[in-house]
Length: 220
Length: 231
Image: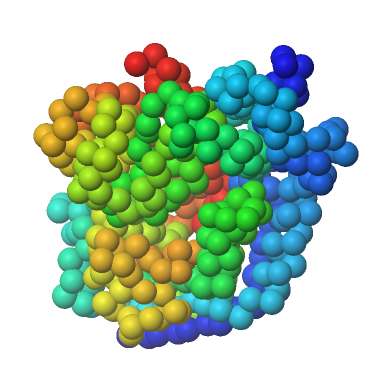
């Protein structure tokens, strides 16, 4: 079992989607996340173990390498693609309750901003680390965030912005969220924001990279 | 007042593929597989684009109010902020502009990103940005050449959403142009559609300055363009 899950973790880390995928070159003609996940399930491996000991370690390694500038956005997207392929096999088990995710993370780019690459990377990384992700997309107002929080009790929220002029909308959205559902934890991220801004607007956590969000969620 | 519109082909634009590779993250050495072929595919396909467009409108009814960080043009007050106001100081005229890489590549990138191949979608996304900026560079070059004839200089271009210029001013900026100029429209929250579009203003005058390194003006320390793009 360990060997299979170790191989699966490597597929996620290096973005090996399936047997047909030529990427990465050093794994050409090898099985990918698709076949290995299927084989693990057919062989009776607990779906929870596949998530915890196959997918999550692989995604964690990608997150750390991205933080350290050892891999870049395209490679992270490739890993996320491998992970999504594996998750398709696990989805029925999450729906039936046979396997459980660690919690829910609601994410969106704030009102007036359509930049979504950073937001998507965080969403992929968080999902790959065992959380259900509700992605509200871009140009999201406080009403949409609050509606999603009410539908997903206990969820943590992530606000993303790229522009100095839209980061100010984080303050209003955070304040409205805290007013509507005070116990909600709000994380923020994006090029113009920092820890001081996070404190100033009353948010709970600022992460400069996707792995930081994962570490925050794992600690809470 | 003077208006000009351009329809560009990709082979008329200068796109440095090394810069594109750097934005993708690979600023040293060749792009690894399969991203090299993805970039080649996105560039090859972009040579067929027919909707890369740019337009500028020059207005002379202007005032740069440094005290209140306002730019007045055609009776409209633009809250451009201290930085942009300072950069446009000395302008005798202003050129407002809209440029777009077009609907085709914007939609292609979006569709791939949300669907069958997010990695290829990301490459199209970066190429789309590069095309919009390259169209902006070409338009800016034509503007510079036109202004030189009367002995005027131009500044860099500045856009709502950056350097603390409120993005809501897009509505005022677009009101200076006929509807759907360059095929670009605004959402109610001032976002441009197609997404691979840029808009903004350029100062014109005898005593304005062009900055070789405009990134010094911006506080976004983590911006991926900081090291790679100059305009």
